[in-house]
Length: 556
Image 1 (spheres, helix red, strand yellow):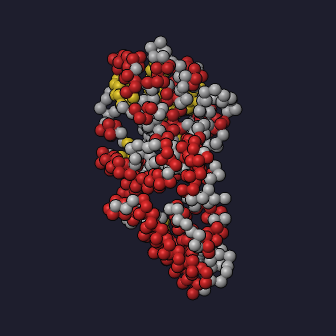
Image 2 (cartoon, helix red, strand yellow):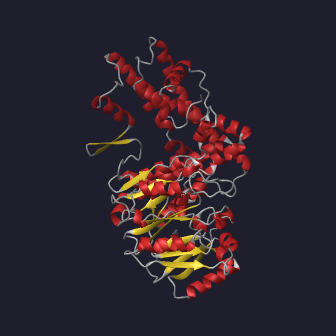
């Protein structure tokens, strides 16, 4: 990334996904506190727990398929999150990936973010790993190539082809692409059986050039003719085929010759291939690259990059990149916190060094404290990555914030009071003035006495500047919850019995209570001393609105 920035190419990063994925574990029938879920899963479903911790989202080529605004009929940049339905450890990614993309590309006038296709084999979609865009220059209309491995309904027995034609066609329709500028190409069975489960293992393209292996496509000549027809009037198509006789398909896959980044660098007249060092270390691919740059073809330089940690798990330079073609106005309209320069990379690396482990043993996955560590590390990284951009929205750097008539207002209680006063619907406060006072006192006990002292920024301060370990932080957290809940339990016991705390429907008191009960459970606090509060929580969590809002679904 630093190298590409130095060459004048704009770079950005996608935020890490929340791990472990408790939603996956809860969907599999595990329930209780975070610690109880981790303990039960580690004993009875360790493979599932490993999947819940999967960090495969680092291979951003599988995050989504992107069509730039120059190609779309509505003039917007379109992004469709990949469902990655073939493999469990990746099939869980798309909800959080979609949420990230919506946060980054939130301007509906310039961007359209589409959720993942249905989770069915006929709609199997692996994102940009099976998509290539060709054009005369990145700002001009182009031709989009969708490479698929099978038709809908076709057998998936044997080495699986992970992209279906129906999925590719659905993405193209959703993006509003012109049919005469789209080409759907079948990947060769020989390449799939050799291990090229994604097209980016056997071909890569940029500008007017497609660099591919002889065995990349089932009907090579038909595919090239289709690309020529689709590119007519836009650019002169330049195919560069690597012969089987010069590079065996096994060498191409092992060395990841094509799982490279093919780039137009401002100072270079011809395209540059950024390939993994494995390409240099494999005799056939190194010799081919030497002949390639000596020719007068469109690729004039090869740079070898050491991405061995990614390569050991099956991902080369192309896997680590999601190309998003944007205009200057679109770059300005996206979330600025994801855009990188040397300084921001330094800052993110410092957060990573401070909060993420540099080694991990399988047994660590069964430790609930490791789950907390992962969450806090991610939150620290997000605060560093997205903080400055959000500061312009809310100077306090807190969520939530609401925009009302062009003004940004923060603080949860103030927002809830505004909702009560300005919006129609069920009231959050009772009509009786004394009861309204009691509700506000109840809510403020949580909002003013409990929550501020247990905020993540306070817990981080305890660790960083006061040397508190996990046990110390947990004791601090429990103490302030206990002080507040002791008072609230007594308060609730005095009130006349009603369906909810102050009436027949939940209101401000319940809205503030339920998140604190969730927080207490997250830090493994025993809440048996608070039967009235817990009974109210159980009643609220049976309601759809509360279920939808809870970060981790309650035990059924």
